[in-house]
Length: 169
Ligand SMILES: [Zn+2]
Image 1 (cartoon, rainbow, N blue to C red):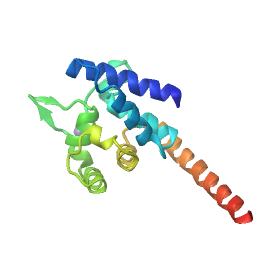
Image 2 (tube, rainbow, N blue to C red):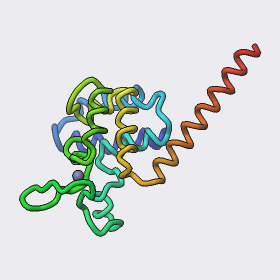
Image 3 (cartoon, protein in one colour):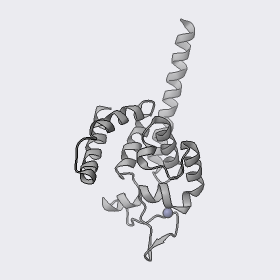
Image 4 (cartoon, helix red, strand yellow):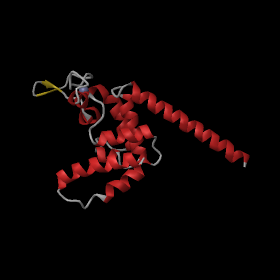
């Protein structure tokens, strides 16, 4: 968890500094991080950090690190200036028509249409809704779906064990 916290902070600071040119806000994001990841699985926490820094394994990113032949979104034919849309966090969360129904569900869950990434990662419930959305798009690959499912199962089992212990006491 300490490592994830470092990642969160590092990426945040870099972006914040570029944008604002000051350091006054540095303490807020760390508090926000603790508040957000409380109650998230490790897989969910990683996803949230990647979503905030646009490091999700979508074609835009994969192409940059030479793990995909294309940076374009395979789920739609949206074009910008004659070019098909690049598949990044912005496109998947806010624009892609291929995820319109899932997106509606997401806005309903967080109670706000077009909530910003910061808003979507500002508390546990929103962050869970966002990770559910991202995994449901099927664009993160089997690895994430399996990791998330396995962690949930483990948590449920842990919950059952705890309940049994409490009952016996
Ligand atoms: Zn698309």
